Amino acid sequence: MAEYTRSIRVRCERANLAPLRRFVDGWLQELGVAPRLAGQLLVAVDEVCANVIVHGNQEDPKSWLTLRLRRIDSGIEFELLDRGVPFEPPPFAPADVARYVVDRRKGGLGLTLVHLIMDRVEFSQDTSGANVCRLSKKIALA
Image (cartoon, rainbow, N blue to C red; front, side, top):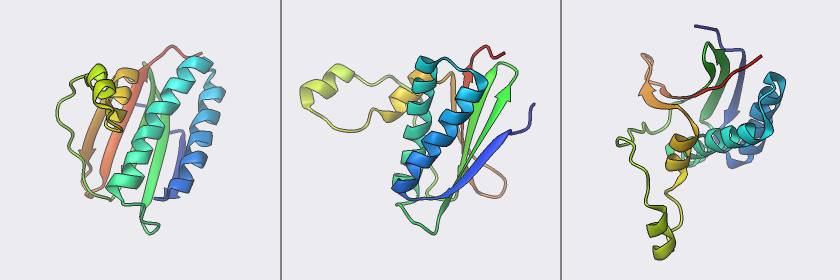
């Protein structure tokens, strides 16, 4: 498997979401990913980064988030690492979006979007106890 080609480490503060988006967007442009797909990938990565910062680490500036990017044989992979509250999502089941509209619910659709955009979404912990989220997408790259 290919090595991670790019990596960024930021404090778990909302203000760092914009630099994370710019970092990912720049890499996707370098790879020549079509703008529409790049926008979708940014939504997925941004959602997971926001969840890690806000929910997993309670926006604690003493906590860190590392985002690593790499090309894989079938496309691209994003890996997020942090040491916040571990997250064990239930098996994916698409949300009933119509129900959200009728009930005027806010929030709760982020992971559904991530699963719909990405081909693989995986949450685990590594041997050091760090939380790991891997997102991958099959795309043809030059």
